[in-house]
Image (cartoon, rainbow, N blue to C red; front, side):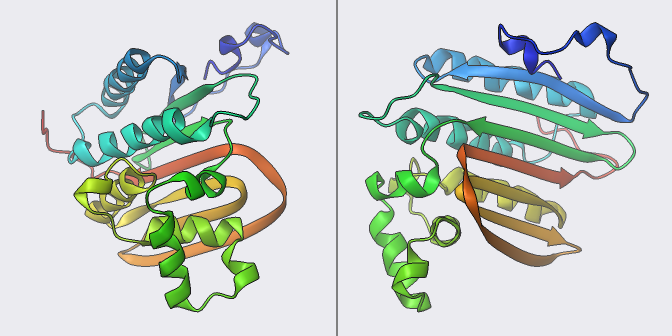
Length: 233
């Protein structure tokens, strides 16, 4: 997948790794720099081109997918690496895959920032998150847990004036899943997990807490495409 090619310290001789025949085809890892908006734009265009080459057709409702990816990249730039915190590397990483047999398309995005729960207090939607939690009757201690904050951020409605706040584009990824009735989005951020699954048009939400943190945010998004995806240009 080319992940180790992004770094100087390659731990293995990759040429000696045994190759396997599989129906799973990957988009090689891309590394983006938060300091370069043009780099982010070019990476999204490159991912779209690579995904289309794997699938064989344009993807119906690409707008939802593009919005979700744009949201992830935008929020890394605006929220993941706040001033006053020491970060070795302010980058983000993106890859994708497509299974020709199962027709499953998967995209993974990762940054090494503070995580969504830690960035919420500085966002425009934080007050609405707290109001949402108050209405749900969550106790004070549980209210501040990462898993609850993640679920709240994904559950509250957004208005057009808040479209740049963390969560809007990720909801577009959920909408993409709903268009097909099958798929999931998993968000692992600091000590919390939020996972939305749609199986045969039945929705299920899972949350979990962890003792040890993931430094940053990992988003894994998967959807099963139709056997024939109409072209939408």
